Length: 415
Image (tube, rainbow, N blue to C red; front, side, top):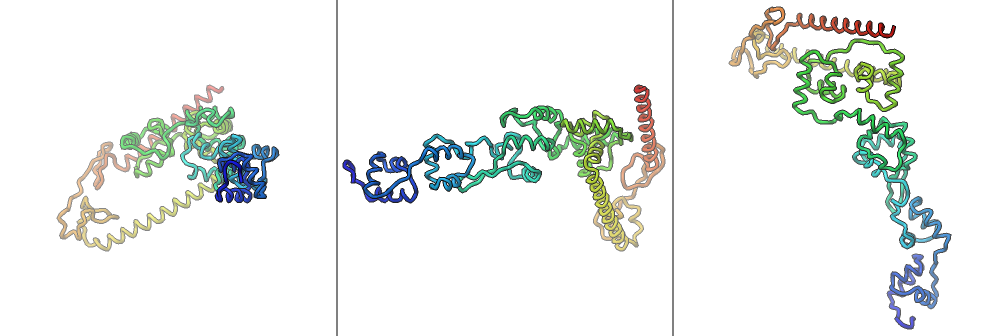
């Protein structure tokens, strides 16, 4: 067919397929290693026609690239996907996914410091209205985020984010409130709730509780953990000691307004409590009552019901074990004098009966260091139950007197 170089059957077949796949002359020239004029001459001899790109089609391709999926562009222009890709490459268009101004959800999370884009946080954010859009390329689709919509949504839900590890302007120009929130997050920093407790921290916590002179706020400052985390750790370690209670103070309207203002400014419960002279738990409870009163009442009712059910189950288990031990060891009076007997667990030495027991240990008398009374107990004690009640009463009276003096001094300063 050509004057200089003959056409092979494979090349002729490629020309015929080009009409069905809607390839251009330039694409055929690159594929077969021939000039455009040679391609045109061969197509003319074969009676085939190849559709060229018009300026309007090229303009539509450039405007739609990155906004409409490649199959969508191909359908609109009545061309195949490969033709669209090659023409985009000829005009210097970058990868379809990264051509637009909208980053992917993974890029946004990496910039803010959130690990992973398929975890609980992402599902929760999407359920709360995170503006995520689907970006389809060919057969794959990606989640992208419109930056303007994201900042508008994030401002309404800024308490969900911790911007300490968010590099400034990592997502382009950021609103003024982000810088302020970043500063507050740095000041609010404490150990995260899921941070592992070390043996040294547990020992310090136990020592502070046994001192009977520290509140939740004091322990929170010493351990750099939230009061909620400390409360949970006390429960996990099954400690009987508790921090001292703060003096009962009624909330004024000024304090409530200050609480709302500081919370909107990004302050943590711990910092607000330090500002108002209250515990973080008290601040959190009051904030929930102000913002979501119905929800707070519902949660309190649920906690009360769960506590009642747990107490009922524990009481049932307790009495069942007592009954079991009463039936098994009821005839042996020696058990009441033995250190190894427990009314609920039974014989801790795993003896079958008291007559054949070889592990018997008599209960030794102990003395209260406060009043000197003799106490017969299997557990080691320093102070008897009566003295413990007296000490608690004395401490509460002391706290009440100190609180009244502080209120009196504040009233005098106001006057």
